[in-house]
Length: 169
Image 1 (cartoon, rainbow, N blue to C red):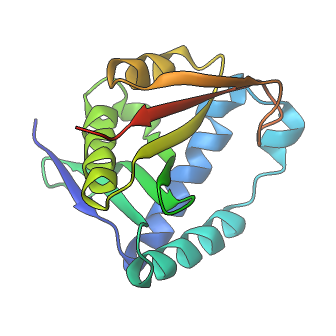
Image 2 (cartoon, one colour):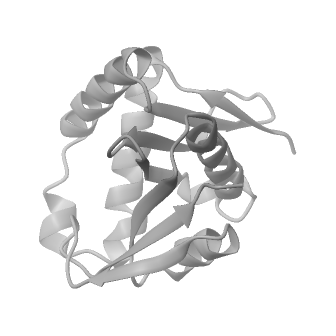
């Protein structure tokens, strides 16, 4: 099995939005309230990705990546990075297709994002993850991320763990 990680561009917005929506309405359904899951709209995700990818093309410190397997062109995963400040970047929207979990895709996406943040000169990276999402938390902790804060609620209305990673080598 060969996993390819490529920078995502504006033409990838629809596919990235569809995976993001799928992940939030299936994988996140076990963590979030039924009302939150039901409130998701594919068109909202598409607008967000179109905006992000347009800004990422022209804005420093922002980038997104997509993963495919064996060159089949089917989106297997994604992640994005945004600048929070001159020194801090945020890793977000890391999702792997529910049918492709546990194949190393998340680790490769995380590595691409961390390399980008280091190369861009950021000193620290942050991310938020649902506290009950032990699979994702294990992945981040294996990658050297450390819990910096536990919040009682996040975007999904559930407890969130905030992680940080020093990007100094």
